[in-house]
Image (tube, rainbow, N blue to C red; front, side, top):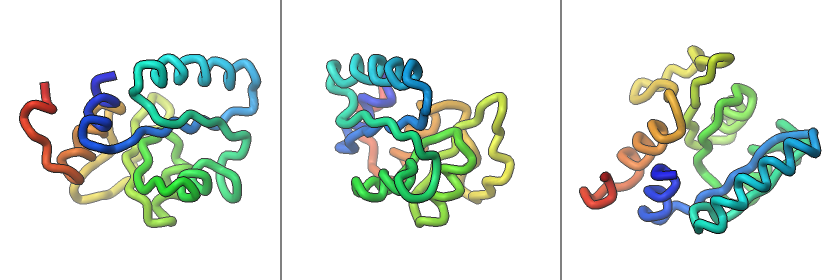
Length: 131
């Protein structure tokens, strides 16, 4: 939650877009995201049944003007990279993103770590933003 607050404090609206074909998972995502929305930590919540390509996550992000993606999905990140977006790969037990060879950064151990790097790269962080 602190990472979301930092993004907003620095003027970056947060969109959550989840790929799922499972109606129960969709409802779960929307419920959790709705709680964050009520706390004014996110500006948009959507789901899609299409992973990549037309109507997929990257296509939707681009249509909304989003230029950076934080994700653990290899296919989304590869597609976003090909579209010129900034990518912030999140490691999981299934994906370590060893393919990502950015000289400035490697993959990240979690969303908060990726957000810290993003903000330091894209925004001058005043001390009061960093607790």
